[in-house]
Amino acid sequence: MKIYSIALSPHDHNAYDGVFHDQQERYTRRKHNIYKNQDDIRPTIGFYFDYYHPNDHEIFAFTITIGGLESLPRGIIDDDFLKFKPTKLWDYFRKDNIYYIDHHQSHATYAYLSSGYSESDILAIDGRGINFKCIFINKNGDITDLSSKVSIGSLWNHFAKLLGFGNLGAGKIMGLAAYGEYSQTMQTIIDYYCDNNFQFPDGHIELVRELKLADVAYTLQCATIELINEYVLPLKTCDSICIAGGVAYNGYMNEEFTKHYKNVYVPPAPGDEGQSLGTYMHADYILNNNVHIPSVYGGKKYDYVGDEKVNLTEVAQAIADGKIVGWFQGKSESGNRALGNRSILADPQNPNIKDIINSTIKLREDYRPFAPTVLEEYYQEYFDTNQPSPYMSRIVPVKSNKIPGVTHIDNTARIQTLNREQNPKYYDLINEFYKITGIPMLLNTSFNCQEPIVETPEEAINTFNKTNLNLLVINDYILRKMG
Image 1: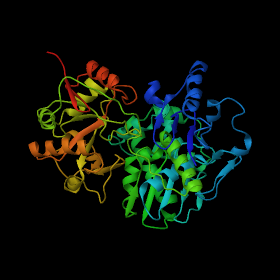
Image 2: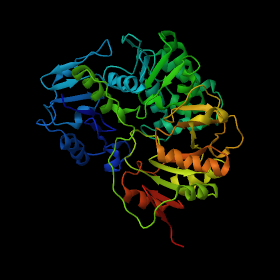
Image 3: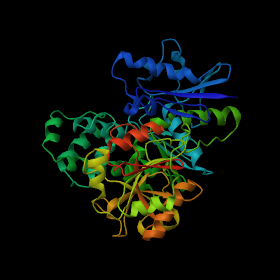
Image 4: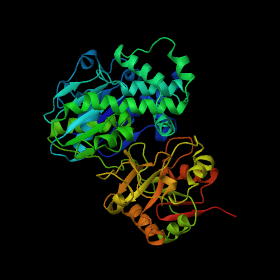
């Protein structure tokens, strides 16, 4: 049966037909595709039906986040769907050709089926779906609802907004945590929140604003690990775990799981931007008895012909000489981590590179670090961790003093491990850099400047021209700045 899936949400709108992962922010150029007024809602509604055609797709599959129904005209989905609450991973609700699963089931399915594990525990954890905030699924597929005990996503988002980072700005706080110290005042506020049905004490805003931002962030991170240790780890039923949901972008938390599980898997689009993927995969598994694993590169492919062919050895040498390169290849990645097709690349040996990129290219907060992509066969020579991390999902201790450009102030890095099968051309570029420098990695950050990741060659060229990028590689061609 041919399936078309969508994720109904106030943000991160996306659809999937088994080939093309349509993340709307890449085309509307609005971060998380958050609309602010009625005039913006129409394009959001329209995109769901631009690609869904009843004659071509036999099943319309969807999942939902609170507030998501506002994205559709009234009457498309009735209340019977919203009454559904699963107790097992493979539960579902179907009426005619419409197939529905819970928000957290979608996260869990995407992570589990993508992992390739024969059995696994699963943690689906975010701010809020429709029925849950956090669920644990054991190796038998049984759901344990932890929503009354663990509300980590909402906690981080509350303080992201309070501290001026905006809605869905929790990731910015995570980088700040490394600069902080433990605050008993902040811990008292968190304890009250956890013990009082996720309500904050009176006057907490004033108390928090008197604290150092870094101390707030550090204490939040400590509390996150404590909640995982208290409520999630005791439920362990096997040696593997899959993690998804917005909180799965927390690299410190994910690395904590490697101390307790032999295998830890976080998919490349763990947040709500991957919801349509998990929904499609669930429907395909149930209805077609098929395990569908989406490509990491699920966007569109763009033809581009330039004036000069690229030479990877020259690009690697330029990076070794201090140049910063925009790297645009093939289809865009799913998710919000640069995985080698829409990247800004630089020398991880340069101790000043973080400040240079933050101030002249990314134009973002100066404390935020950058991640290394390291060839998989060498990662344990530089990083103290026990398993690969292909999607920049874990923050791990750094063992070497040779890579200050990607080493955070707390001596950690959010690594991406890479083998040649995953991305041959990107692997070959890093390998050329390794031959020149003896360092088997590059600094890799998403290709953007205060915007969603660039999607088209035209957007890549525009960002190249308006920032201090030195070179731009688009597919098989290289662009240079005049003068």
